[in-house]
Length: 160
Image (cartoon, rainbow, N blue to C red; front, side, top):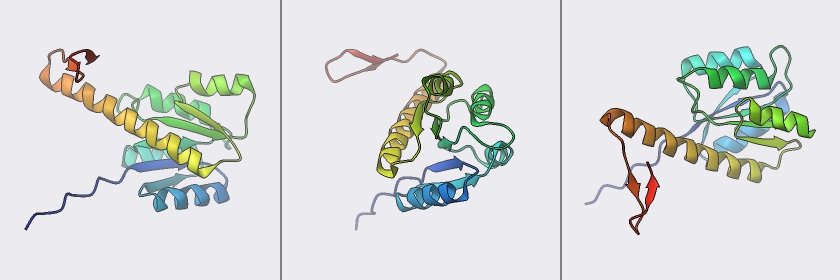
């Protein structure tokens, strides 16, 4: 009898938004797609969640009471143990300067509300997958203490 392969580990996504309806909608959608969803209503709660567990991704509103999402993103990226976590902004702010600010503070993507859930999930999956691959490659190089070169099927350097 062959054992079935273990299911992939659930990815933890932190959703930070002061609007309860948005939190509920996103957490329900994430859970339905196999993610473990954590919720925070402001930057302080988000940082408390980070102290409990480092999520695999963050969906972050830019406009919240107290500390705004741009400042929170800078805090996340300035903390070495958290800096690899992809942050996707989801906000009603749609001016070019605001979008550029989202990327400048460390966001990997920026989605303007109203949200289209299938698009948000596709973006999230891509960024979480890319962040994981990058983190694993860095850890492999760090463990070995040596340079690592990965070749593709044709013998070309794919990563170093």
